Amino acid sequence: MKVLLLKDAKEDDCGQDPYIRELGLYGLEATLIPVLSFEFLSLPSFSEKLSHPEGYGGLIFTSPRAVEAVELCLEKDSKTEAWKHSLREKWNAKSVYVVGKATASLVNKIGLDTEGANCGNAEKLAEYICSRESPALPLLFPCGTVKGEILPKMLKDRGIPMESITVYQKVPHPGIQVNLNSYYSKQGVPASITFFSPSGLTYSLKHIQELSGDKIDQIKFAAIGPSTARALTTQGLPVSCMAESPTPLALAKGLQLALQGPRC
Image 1 (cartoon, rainbow, N blue to C red):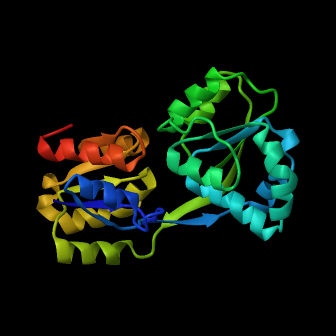
Image 2: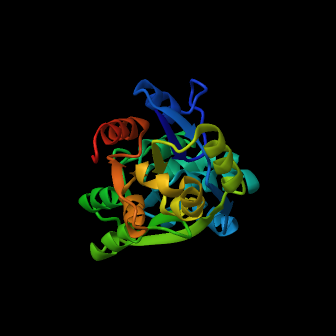
Image 3: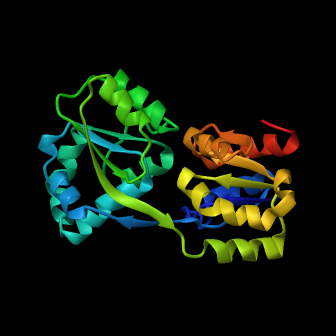
């Protein structure tokens, strides 16, 4: 059964995207089409903040892009050596909170230990942070221009100081329309389409509606995370499956259930 995932491909240690492999084990033939590109912002300011860990109680990462912003700061400002010899150790003396194992893995690669990786979304991470001892200094939160308000609001309501800095913005991938046209002409209407973010839905939905036509009612729509599920509902689309966590296994199990019956 053919399913479409609206995300970019990321090879793991086995040289294959983990979503393609996991869904394949469940008898699903997945195709990946990227719908988002990213532009990085405010890196000089972010780099300055990274150079002063003494001013913060820790870090919060809710997306891989925020971790990439750290890597870019280290490369562009020749801070790699300073990071290895002192900054990394100073940040590691503090809490580094993350959403999801994919983000945690990237944070680990830059030498930081993480907490909260099993939290599948920002709301659960906020609950986890609130359950910890409240830091006297603010948590530094690098984020995108479109960020959920749940985490900042929950921390503010609990009196936990946080300083957010916008380090990237999402823009439509230039190849969305061409790639979707190619997929539909070769594969036809997929049994399921999975959206990984509200922005990805915004940038691709019009093309999907045009290409699917009357057959759009046959598609099982899946979402990674509650915010994307809410965005689907707002657009009037039924959510056949919401992955319990942002992992290939959770999506594979959810899609299997959704494609077997009317709804999961």
